[in-house]
Length: 141
Image (cartoon, rainbow, N blue to C red; front, side, top):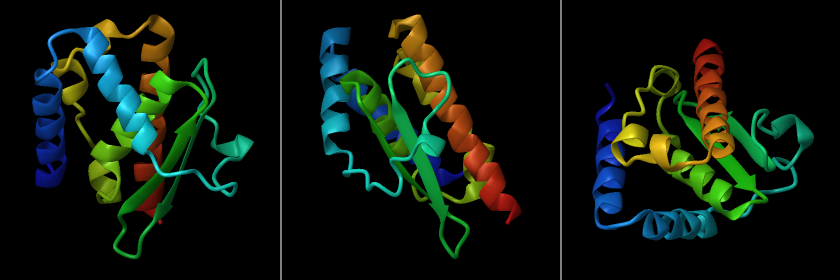
C-alpha cells in the first residue's frame, strides 16, 4: 500500500485521538470543512453532485501528467463539508492506482462508521466510492 496514504491515515487517527468526545470530533470536522478551498463554478456543476448524499456534495477530479488525482469538493452542509474535506485530505494528489485500490481503514479506526447518522454514513460511502471511481478512470487513461 502507498506509504503516503498510510501516513495520512495515521495522522488523522492521531489528530482525532486528542478529542475525548464526539462533539469535539464534529468540531474538528467542521474546521476541516472551513479550510477546504473555494470550489470554482467549473467544478460546481450538477454532473459533479454525489448521488446518495442527503445534502448537496460536489466532487470532481483532474489527473496530473504523473497520473495522480487532484480532487475538488464542496458541500452545502457543514458536517458533510467536513467529511468531504477529510476525504480530500487523505486522497488528494495520490496516484490513481493507489486511490482505486485504497483501504481507508482510518474511517473505522476513528469511529466515523459508528458515530455518523445513517444518511451521513451513506453519503460518506458514496463519496469514497466516487473517489475510487475517479482513481479507476484516471488509471485507465
